Length: 335
Ligand code: WQD
Image (cartoon, rainbow, N blue to C red; front, side, top):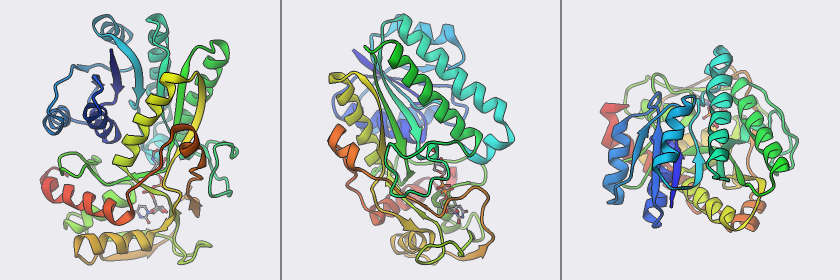
């Protein structure tokens, strides 16, 4: 039996494909390549030394999804496919609700029809909204502060309702904090199209000379150095967390939310210094006004991940920066 990975050519999806293959799992990758490239799948095959089926299917194409379940023996699904840019979701809410929520509903309906009731869902710490309760526990009050976050919260609620209606389902809702870094091979990494919204891809572009300087969005927050604090987690730790969640749902029914973070918070200036140390470069920056919607402090309480999944992150910020910079150096022409 195989694990279907939707969004398998994406940043976290591709790293999870590699992790599952290296752990002996059989996988099937699915992607519509709206925000990724088939070359990423080639690279996953190269670094894992294993082949696997790939389907170019959109989540909204029900017949395309049914064809996958007809042809492949799918045991479980790890569902990454979705749009994920906060700012874009504010500008294009209908596209986000249709793609993320309607697409997920299509998938879940097809899974049910084929008797596939094991699911790991890619959720996000953004469902904690503007809660001020850092470190965030899974029972921290949930709220949506942008359409992207609203889609994640809606899909979580859909899955909780699905489990209530059919308690034979085995569901894990993984809430990512701030994924960064790249595969140590230098073959897989994050490739945002256009000007990056997120901190680390932006710093990486500045380091490559593709952008002039980093703009630090405010240094007047109530934090040790005035800049926002975030829980940056290595994408390989995140991939290992998905394997741990898959193993957990093999033996347990339920619909449990689990934080995937390190439990450590780093400020923008601390992150910048760590990247400078890893790259040996000085990153020019300018402090500007706050970015609308930013919270001052966000980092995970990691107790449940350890207790329920037997998983915790092991890679530190320096390793995250080194791997991010190695990837940029080997793929700079593509970024
Ligand atoms: C981190 C910090 C910025 C860019 C977002 C999504 C979240 C998740 C991860 C999907 C903040 C500061 C950033 C820049 C800056 N994505 N910053 N200059 O906002 O914590 O989380 O990505 O699940 O849902 O909301 O990440 O990397 O954008 O920002 O000063 O050019 O860096 O103010 O404090 P964020 P980020």
